[in-house]
Length: 242
Length: 242
DNA sequence: CGCGATTTTGAGCCATGTCAATCGGAGTGG
DNA sequence: CCACTCCGATTGACATGGCTCAAAATCGCG
Image (tube, rainbow over all chains, first blue to last red; front, side):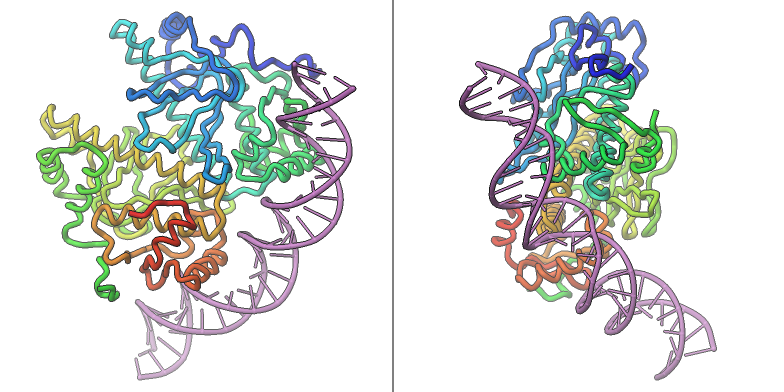
């Protein structure tokens, strides 16, 4: 049941369904409205890994990730990076025409499919728009809330807790869209990504992962995370597990 | 020109004008609409220091700080705290009916006057509402953007840079509402507040302040901050000074 | 097979945390 | 006016978590 071969890939044919599931888990989107959305975003945009997603258009952009991973990141002048959040299928990618360009960039981590929702909304009949817009706003609000959690990680937690807590957040989010199989999920991040997100050095992320593995709490290897001891992890992170 | 007696107090009779100035500097609020707002908030609510401001009403709350300081904070189970942001006159205090109660609390640091804008908006004639709402939304957006800066502080900066950068942000915000006199401003925060915001221990905040003072960069004493060397501070923090 | 990217490991250092004590000012009651 | 208390600021001694530098091992890929 937990062979590596059993792990769901992070790209699959039913990605849109997963993204919709993600959206619905955060909002009151009805089945009919989901069906609308399904049709509205039939031709998603594609971005290659490392490509920047935010366009510099003057109008606000509203996109919706259908498959793949992206992140919000700022690159500092000394080339250090801070990753603010990871964006998964079903997440909303909102970019205001930044008053300053440098607040954060949105960058694809894997290949990403996303739908231009602003455009899709325009093509919808008026009464259909509001609920979809609400669903997007709700998804965005959840994403904002997660940033508070991330600030707590950065400001208050030790390295092992930071790493474990972030991985559990990702576990929870991926589970909601059906991308967890047998307490195991794909993690298309390098240790550098984790370091940039968690405010740790790459070397220390590596040691911390080794430590977590040695304690048989979780195992991160081969782009794959296995939750070994949900209970002890919940204790370490103070985070309730599903 | 820089006697302690010359420093503007953080409470004064023209606080509403300052708050409106802060709001106008971030949005296209017209003079007439500002006048509307002025009248709409003539009877502000009062909160004592340490009082919680967010009410647990089921409807979203939209308040607007007229005078005093507040903060967004989360208290962890081990009684550590993370302060997410400081809220100053002219800032918006938005609380959604949190799906989880624990995302963050909004707490007065000094005595705070604030206006219930949601209520005020209802009493306004329709055509007046939209611009005011937009102004509130713009203020909220600026506040969100600052949280990205704060995440960078927490994740990437050394203690001296964290402290200096935060104090410069406050300097900039206070200057915008006329609460800076001669590169000096009132700071109604204890070192514990700074520690909780910056993810440092109280002791280390104290040492860091001493270090910044020894280097004649800035001086924090008696609830009062003096910017001594704007240029070298700009160099340390990578933050442009007004 | 060779090369760049990533992971892993070791050694040593330094920034920051912890613990504990002291100090000073502001209030408060006698 | 003094003694007491409380809270915040300050300092010292010491421990340690996380960083840096450097090198090796491993992986993925052409």
